Amino acid sequence: MEELIAKRYATALSSVSKDIKGIVNVLNVLTEVITTEEVKTALTSPIVSADKKTEMILSALGKDADITLVNFIKILGENKRLDLIPAIAKVLNSDLQKESNKYEGVLKSSKKLGKEELSKLEKTLEKYTGSKIKLKQEKTDLDGLRVSVDDLGIEVNFSKERVKEQLIDFIKKSL
Image (cartoon, rainbow, N blue to C red; front, side, top):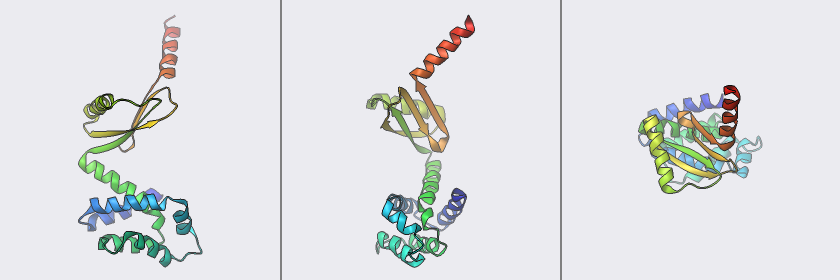
């Protein structure tokens, strides 16, 4: 439900803004701020008035903020939807990625890959998807590799345990 509402706000903002990339950058920073525990508590508190919540977000923007973004924040505040800023930012980031055909993904593994190996993997994914993909590495206790690009709906797993299980199943079937 939250995502559907966020899409409507994101569509409205995209239709009236001339500098959507700049606004998305600001919304990404606001998302980081809003996800901190203190700010999140203040935004969801029934004790703090909607006007105070809006003022809090607007003060974080500063005086040189884009007037379209300021008005957008005011509308969100009036409708008690300031907590949707992270979801709206996510929708707008996804739209920008689709527009530019450039996506970000995550590579999870137990050890860090070298730049050359990472580049080869990105090029392979680019051939497969037709899109430019930039991977970020995260270290996990996974015995293998997991690549995921959420906005394209791609998730690839290479696990030693899984290959071992498939090999055993294949041997059992052939006997």
